[in-house]
Image (cartoon, rainbow, N blue to C red; front, side):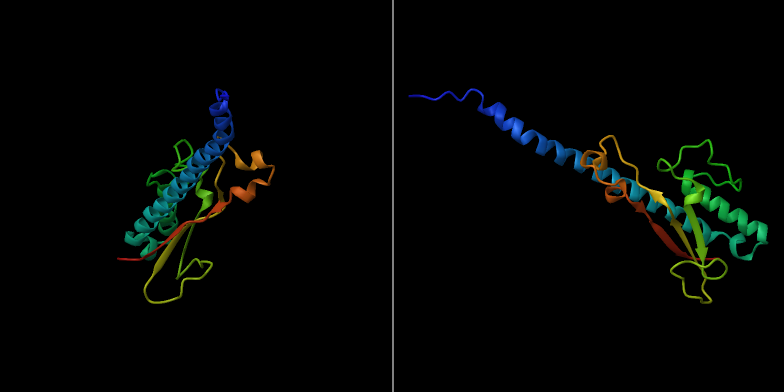
Length: 166
């Protein structure tokens, strides 16, 4: 007697397909997470590099120092070197949802960092992203599992520290 096995491949596909789909979508979402973090880290690097070579940020007047830090924030958020605080309002940010309010600039001589940069004769700047939460893509894992969104999507906090080089 021979047994018919016509539908066995469909049943195997029905069993394996959801697992493969979850692996594929999870890999894509993890790739987006790494891309977002890397983009934020590179943006903080650009801001720290700009501050490390700007003379006015250390030796300028109070207004010049504020303008230089605003320029660095705008460079981090949208890549525009402008002293206008709203320069990035109509521009596309480096990553969706990033604003200048998410950028923290601190140093070891005027604006304290947490954790602190040790005081020294050499000046350092730290540019950090604060309170930027990675947003879910098309496939939201938290919704699918019924968990709280912060379980899977958490705040990204990249930062770069650079030495001032006059």
